[in-house]
Image (tube, rainbow, N blue to C red; front, side, top):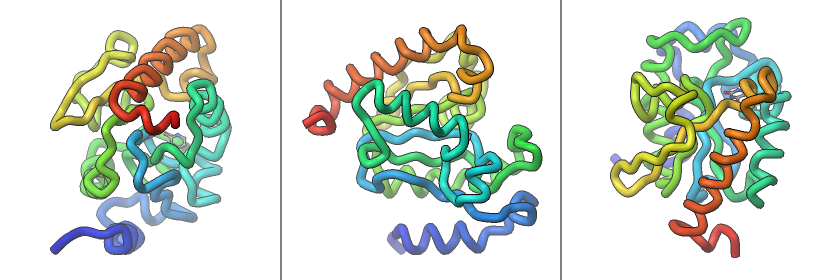
Length: 190
Ligand code: URA
């Protein structure tokens, strides 16, 4: 049977495939435009996201909004989701089993949005989506093509908050992203 947003959101709300659902205040499904050509994928909800039920609304989210603004994007032009939809306790990395349990939901989100470009924010997202052994320090800003979709990893905004010395490299990644958007989907900037 064909998937739909309604079905996917309902399946996600009901999910008890891992322990993370027990500690959550809210499921953090996604934000942005379901018809976007560009998708960003983070790791998992933090405290504010868990309380508000929206991804990237805490300090890292404020920085992500600024990063989008730098290349003339905002949440109306992109779709934002996470590898796991429920907050891991104390913001620890989601366990491999938790990522695995949640991965069908992200796959269904990607299948419904059908983005042309996917940007992985940080190691967890990049390793989950792009390549299990991806090294973010070496491979950020590098494009990979798969089934007509372009994938790039960049630093997670939380990493940029912790270590400002990474910001120039992240900026270069954003410039590459803007260039790729101009080539693949120029209508985004119309
Ligand atoms: N960090 C993430 O990876 N995702 C969020 O939604 C918030 C912070």
